[in-house]
Image (cartoon, rainbow, N blue to C red; front, top):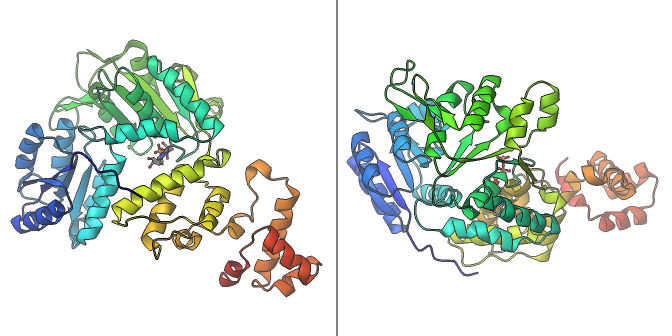
Length: 460
Ligand SMILES: Nc1ncnc2c1ncn2[C@@H]1O[C@H](COP(=O)(O)OP(=O)(O)OP(=O)(O)O)[C@@H](O)[C@H]1O
């Protein structure tokens, strides 16, 4: 499998007050093909950020002068959405956890393994839109061409039509189906694509922080407002604002957002004047908003504002034709990242992944393949490699029949056999007795339903 060369190396800014750490990291990351900028203080890092394209920042937590947290806050003002990874000594792990809550993508405790860091960087960079270059944008367009299921083909036709307009779109679907990816694609295909695409994670941003994140604040507006801060809505001017997990926002925020959607004006916290902002609004949720409206948790008027067009992304089990295509894509990209020339995917693995119900959807598939690639031997990805990462065997998952065919007699029979096998520690003779069938019959059914009797024995 050929690796597509990345035309522009990613630029990493490393901030640490220890020159030795800077030197070691610079050498290690340069040899892995990254462009490196280094800064011995937060102030120097901010100067570099003003003048350079940076795709990711690695920062120490504890530095004299400006702490890692302060650098992050100011860096985000200069380059909204900049992914930040913290390096942290044991004593500052708690601070690093706070930093992740405040928006850092991750932290690595010191001392860390160089390979682990490179791996993490590649992982984060593959998830982020690049500050320059169009590698990821091309990948988004590629999603449309790769779709194999009729449901996704239909959805992409709709996406292309919607992208041409400027209407608000509500994107619905289970967690991990690819709602954010669809939002990015809409932006990419729209006339706004040269302007920012700004993601607001309404679900994980604490309620008290969300207002200042979205609308910004002026210095002195509240205790920690040490400087003026631009809000994310403002940052999305001329571009697209993506409100993820919209079902989770407080009733006060619902009112503020509704007002913004109506008059397209924002006022920073503590400011007297209003600013007009021209951005397109896309929102996503895995919640049932109609139910939430009935329960009084979500405003109906906001719902109608947001869902001028609704896109429903099907779960992965409703579009199994896409599984092998997506799997091939992930296998290729993780094999490249792990430096493996190519990884074979035998038929037993394709059968397994197309049958497994993937409750965590594309995200779960992606993670399972990532773990499988790390654990596989002889460059062959087998189902066991994915089971080792915690993904259950089909025998175990079939205990509860899939919701879409829960009344299937075959599923019921399969479930009964599995229960009997579990009860008897996987001994087929005993399970047959329990079920009142012959040994030959149970043997035949185990084969027919592809039950992994061996793994059931191992689980006792
Ligand atoms: N068609 C696709 N091709 C490649 N990767 C995909 C595709 N769809 C989704 N993914 C990947 O699956 C993961 C989950 O996608 P995404 O974050 O868009 O889902 P989501 O529905 O927004 O999830 P959540 O509800 O948890 O926010 C991401 O890593 C994304 O890159």
